[in-house]
Amino acid sequence: MTTPWPKRRARFNHDWLQNRFLPAMDAAMSVLQNKISDPRFLENFPTETLSTWPERSAEARSLIERFEEEMSPRVLFHRPPLSRCDPRTLDWLPDLVHALWLGRYPVQAWISEAVDALRESEKAYDAFRSRTADGLRDDCLDALVRFRNACRDLAVSISRLPGEILVA
Amino acid sequence: MNEIIIIDSDNVRGTALAKRCFVRASSSVFVYTFENVWKLVCLKPNGSGGTGAEPNPDNWFVALRHYGQKNITKFPVVQGGVEMWYGGSGVKPDEKKTFNIQRPFSSDEINRVLDEDFEELLDWAFAVDRESRPLPRLLAPDLAREHSTALLILSQGFLAAHSDQLDEQIGDLMGWNDGIAKADGGLSDKMKEAVQNRDWWLKALGLPANREDEKWTEFEQRLRNELGPKENEWEGSGTKMLTDALRGGTSNPNFELVKNGYLDLARRFRPRGQQ
Image (cartoon, rainbow over all chains, first blue to last red; front, side):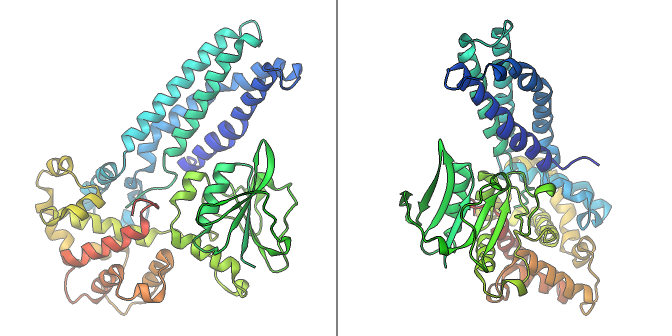
């Protein structure tokens, strides 16, 4: 059984991105700015933290792409009580309910915003990686800040997607 | 004994939660949060407040604590008080405490919770006879809104099938627009007859035609639990009148009845700030 979308979102956005990945990037920034001295952290940062991004980025993409399908009130017709509607009703009511949901909320705008934020994060990641081929040094700081900010915007845009099925 | 403390390293989320607590707290709400250093912030309903507050530690009767701050042992609640726990991703099975907010509590989600749900939560938390009361909706895992949701969606279907009678207010509230009307392709004419029939509703709601059947009593009880209106709000509400009409069976549901039922249900369902 697939994990419900809100749970998957929470695991990605809250548990991983906001509470693990972003704090790790903040820590890396503090080290590069010489606010903290931790050479070992910098040494491990690319393998222990950064290397997880490509897989997580794919997870974010899937999460955003699946939002409309999984969080539309149309899914309520897959289980009782609404699954008990007669077949003729099931021909039109689920699609109507979906269309009304799209009419009530800026769902497409929310999704586009999240897709754009993800694209920016991916670009910022590539730029950052290209600067770190020879290891993390002070001159990587700007690229790291841009990547961190892009990830923070991604977190905000994913948070904006409602975590419950909005029926009214 | 009216003080509430929120312990949350995320200042934005802690503040969002504190503001929602003003639905019940008459004086002030304290947030112990992290902004470079841990600090205690006092918030007042008029927006004033600040750091350096000197609360009476005997007053902590209700504490709302983020799971991440379980190691902070400061600010214990007094004997008879209550601690409720929450997380940005909802209840964590491995960190579950006695009382857990069932919904994910990110700052956005906190703003979506209905006032009446916060009111119910805090009324329960401050009640002397708390132990003999049912758990409030935010703490009870089994109080989903499946019956009221079904009634609301069927009402949407009914109203869409009567799109020629929709006024701007109800149309906007439902999300009806010209695009849907064009895509409709005469659907409303075909469906109007079906949705006006009481059986269309009963079949979807799993209810019998016999109004004396116990399933009706159970359905109404569940509906009231899900919506949580007080006694005087339930009697005479649009939802109650629609339910009575469906149960009574003396006439088929009409546009005004369904419209009023929908407006009442939608008001209870709409996220805060969009009502």
